[in-house]
Length: 87
Image 1: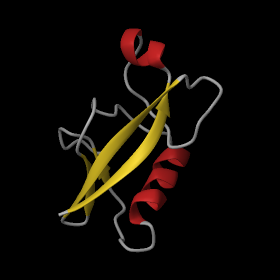
Image 2: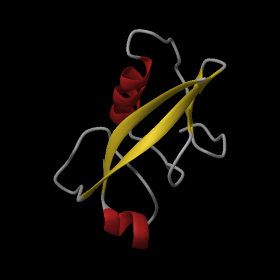
Image 3: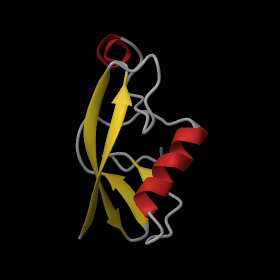
């Protein structure tokens, strides 16, 4: 089994009282919290293994996270949340 831990940043008010969990692998002004999220590589797909389900990622954040996960060793183009939904 292949696991990778990625530190991600998010806005705690949005997560707790807003529309959901929209973390970013890059810190922004609006990010006031950070969290380590573990992803597992299964059958060519990176699956979120821990923490609240990620609602979505911007295209830029998705590509950046995919590059961090693949790290020149893997060739996945898909990231799914803990429920198996593509993000």
